[in-house]
Length: 431
Image (cartoon, rainbow, N blue to C red; front, side, top):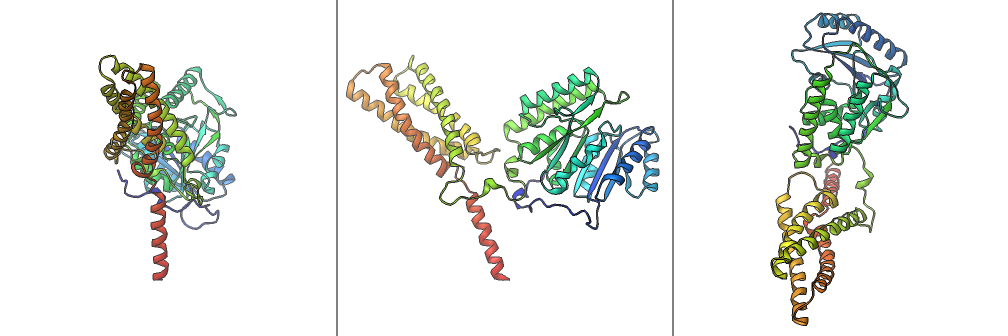
């Protein structure tokens, strides 16, 4: 897996010129397995539609997944007959494997694929790829579940599709509506960096790519489609659903443990307005304050509950220290991810160590308050202890936020931008 190239170093999305010379603007892949009967009809119909309606140069690539019938011969004949058609033979099965292989070797700036049965109305093809050609979006998908889509299929497939997408929304927080529609497109520079991170080689390939793209902050465009189910489809529904659920578990676990380097993809392409500096305004301060307050409120509730629990068996100083330690570790982890947007495992141990230093300062404030209370009143009630602790924690909270923002999770983007500006200035001077 290559992670040495930061996405932020890439050029901005560019509008592709219709009259550009060289590689076709669009390379649309048709993955097939034992489709000798339908392949010729599909390719001829697709080619005719593109030749009549598509204003850019295009290519149709037939990706054969180790077919055992005459599919390779049919594909070769079509490639010899039509200049815009080529065939690609793979010796192993897997739709994801076919797409990864062809897309990785394609020289077209926009890559797409569609199923051989042409269940999706071809009139949606231009709306699918137009945002990628214009540079507005990074990926595009056809959606059978959009409100304006017109879909004809059996109740069994309808239930499975909606249930699967509900699982994606609840388990992986997916924002796209239809993961498995065989009608998608991606810009090549995006594919070059996403594909090495996608492990699946089968039907889950689409979902994994979309989840990673969405988590990386890429822009996904959805197109409502008219779709008619193919009653002769060879897809094994139960086996495919089982493999998909295994994929959901694998990706969800990787995201939860920070195994994927998505923190490097947070600012993928071009000028992101969130990276712009407004003079005199600390960047992200309002969002960080809101996140810190929410995390702090929850941490305080946890802390008070733990203190009350520990106080049943031990003295106030030990109960305070134990409750503060547990809640501080959870507070640092939550602020790291939610407030300051730090993802991945990199620096996690150092952040927790620095968080413990901040914890020690908070412990000194709260313990000192309890000591002062004991000196002043002798034997204070439990309610008085809680009131003093709340006041001390409010003071510690303000200090904790300042230390978190300036020391534990500093915003290094400004430094990086200044370094890049300095390098550019030196380069201009050298010229």
